[in-house]
Length: 378
Length: 135
Image (cartoon, rainbow over all chains, first blue to last red; front, side, top):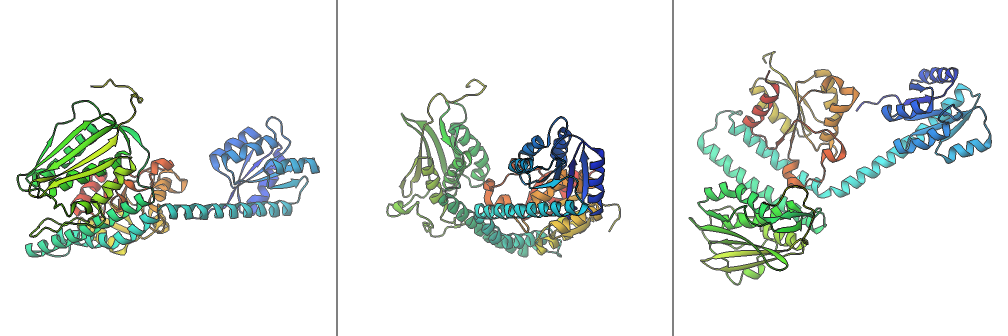
């Protein structure tokens, strides 16, 4: 953004003083605003965000001292300079104590005003610069993983963008064979993008930064939403989704909604993908004394007993001969397990080859009697 | 270029992406201006007066898109462009799903009119642009 001259606000009840300060400053190419009392001055500081304030200590109504005291609340780094006719050491010390950067005894020369203002503004600039650097550094630290993943993904997305241009026929005619190849290439890129995403999730979970604030939520509603969301993909795969639906008692847990959605979405998605044609996925919701229990059962190919212990390991994938579905990254279940554990829950798996697999997620029930703002239970 | 079609500014740090957007937009006979960072974008907004802005989010720094969008909505400098529709075009949401650790509204920043994920499907992009520019 373009550099503009610093704005200086002169607060003084004497018109002559406001005028002479303005003249000196305007000649030095500052932008200048003036106020004839403290209240107006404070309002202008709020509205115009000046870089510096030159304020007379002795004014009727709100004094210069009071103005000084209100400044940090509006802009902690504003360059504050006081001018006064009774330049005693006491009032100078008092003004500095209350946040003034510098002190200008009346009468002063234009040169004195210039020097003192320049010095205060320079100090402000340095403080702001240090502040900005600190913020930038903090931002980088907090978002390091996001930055890295941005760098990893950008070239892939650029490739996909070029594919889109080709598919839209904007780069000359494309025949069906070429289109099919582009689709295939795109699929591989998507798989790589998913892998990067999941790796990103894992490293966030590792940093303890993935799971956000817990709130009370009804698992039934979460599942209801997800089932609706995933119904089309089940239909496309010829798999029927069995879910009792959104009516019934609420099963409240304390959870990060997005994290929980990710867990169930992953499990349901797996159950659909690794199912048999005309297979079924059954989602059950129940509770016991201290847990809310979600069970996701499929009628898929099942997992061999020797593979079961490794199923939640990172990058573990069960090879399936003749498998045409695109392989997952091998991170999904590992992420699901970590997320469930972050909610003080447990995830278990049972499976029988040729019959199907069942994942059970247990989450601690939310303590009864949470705030039920508005709306009676159905 | 038909002179009566609208002019669109593309602000993105990726040259391939700017080229791709230009291909899509010129094929739909829009006028296209490109900029590769916030300061170029600022200049282009003021000098070219685009009818719509396609804005990347992560450029030189993390939230360039957000800050430029916010400036367009609120700073005096951009008074002439305040009502110009802004569409974010970014892979940010995809990158981190809904987990992207920054929400404009949390920082009191004004958001864009719309959001499109990269890679952009030409038909989708044109449909969204149409919605804003239809007289």
